[in-house]
Image (cartoon, rainbow, N blue to C red; front, side, top):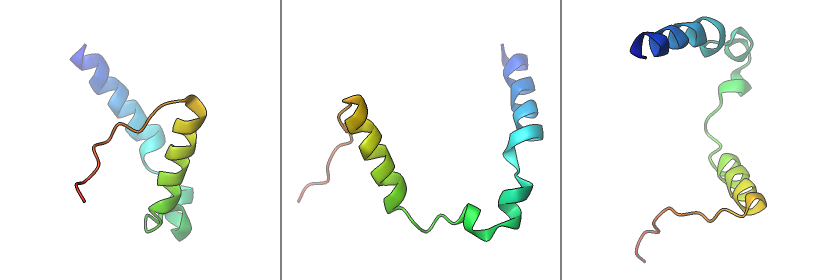
Length: 59
């Protein structure tokens, strides 16, 4: 099982880990916008009827 996972990891690394297009386009790797991913997750959770089960910080 471990060997199979190692092989799959190598295949993933060879074909998907690095992206020439993403490396050539600075906007493709911009991680400064944290609100959009959060909004997307919230909308998908609402669409699927899944509650956000993360603990909230005390006020």
